[in-house]
Image 1 (tube, rainbow, N blue to C red):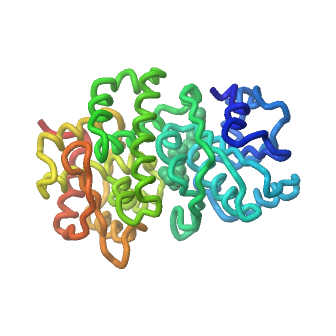
Image 2: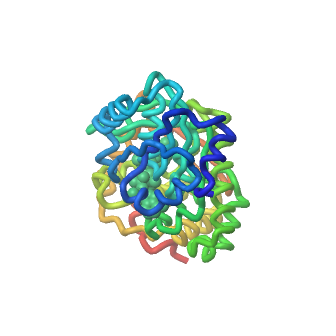
Length: 346
Ligand SMILES: NC(=O)c1ccc[n+]([C@@H]2O[C@H](COP(=O)([O-])OP(=O)(O)OC[C@H]3O[C@@H](n4cnc5c(N)ncnc54)[C@H](O)[C@@H]3O)[C@@H](O)[C@H]2O)c1
C-alpha cells in the first residue's frame, strides 16, 4: 500500500498541490522512505521531527512552521504525517494552524497510531506541565494504514499498542474480544490477515464512538477505559518506565476490579478480560505506593470541576462512566492491580 500512496491520496484530495510536505522521523524515513517515495512523481518536501515525547513541543512546531513557510508552503499545501502517534499529533497540529489550516492525511506507522491516534481528529503537543495540553481538533482527509510497515516495529511497541485494541473490544465489541482470544498467536506473530482484522475492528470502534461524540461531552469518555489509573502511573513514574499502552493495560486491570465490585460485570467476565490483557501485554511489574497513585488520579485531564471520572467495563463489549468512585474503592482497585503482576489467580 505504501508504494502506491500518491494515487491513493489523489483519490481523496484531487491532484496533488505544488507543495506537499511529509512530516516524519529520521528513523522511520531511513526504514520506509524509499518505499514511500515510489509513487510520487514529484518529490515532496520532507520535514523531520526527532523521535520521543520531548520533541512533541511548541518549540518543534515553531521550527517546523518556519521551515514550511521558507519552503513556499501556502494555503493549498497538503501535509502527510508519516510516523507514530507523536508525528501524527504534531503533524495534525501543524496542519491545523499553518495558514489557519491546511489539508492533511495520516499515514500511521505504529500499531497504536493505526488503531487509535490517527483517528478522531485530536492533534497537539505537550507542555512541561503535562502531556497534550495544547492542541486542536483537526480531522485528516484520510488515514492510510499499511500493516506491512508494522514489520519493523519493536515487539514491545506492538504489544503496548494492542492494549488499545483490547480496550476497544472491552468497551464496544465482544466479537473483537473473542477474535483476539482465539487468534493471539497469529496477531502477535504479525500475521497480516490477523493484524488487519484487529486493526479494522479497533478503528471501527473508535470511529463509531467519535462520530457520536467528537468533543468528548459524553460517550467519547469510554475510550478512556484504563486511562485514569494509567495516566496516574505514567505521571508517578515520570513517563520513563512504561509505554502508554502498558500503563493503560495496568489501568484496565484496576477498572475490571472496580467493575466487579460495582456489579457491572461478573467475576468470570473480569477474569476472562484480565487474562486477555496479560496475553497481549508484557506488563513490567510496578513497585509503587497505592496512596501516591490514588492521589495522582486526581490530576487526570478528563476530570471536570474536581469530579473524578472513571470508566467502568459493563459486561463484555460495553462500558459506562461513573463519577462517584470513593477513595476507598479506588485504593482497593489499585492494590489489586499492584498485586497482580503475574495475571489473575485461579
Ligand atoms: N491523538 C490522539 O487521539 C492520540 C491517542 C493516543 C495517543 N496519542 C499520542 O500518541 C503518542 C504515542 O504514539 P506511539 O505509541 O505511536 O509512539 P511514537 O510515535 O513515539 O512511536 C514509537 C517509536 O516507534 C518508532 N517507530 C514508529 N513506527 C515505526 C516502524 N514502523 N518501525 C520501527 N520503528 C517505528 C518511533 O520512531 C518511536 O521511536 C503519544 O504522544 C500520545 O499522546 C494521541
